[in-house]
Image (cartoon, rainbow, N blue to C red; front, top):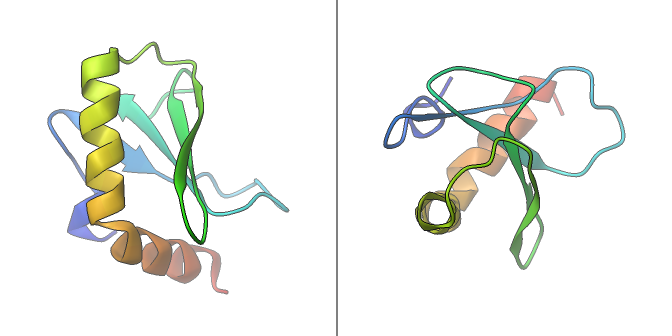
Length: 85
């Protein structure tokens, strides 16, 4: 897993294997993977919050959003490697 996806300010970034048909996205949780997480769609020209089921504070979501935007290419590359596309 690329370093960019390992840890950011105590949050972990990860993919789930069985999400066929969904566009590129990343899940984020505090400390460890959890079903209660935030999900960001990574689109061609934008990054969008899909949901915040992990109830991550708005201040942290803003920092996470900026982090994803800054590391977008690496995350997309990791997505394609992970799913073998």
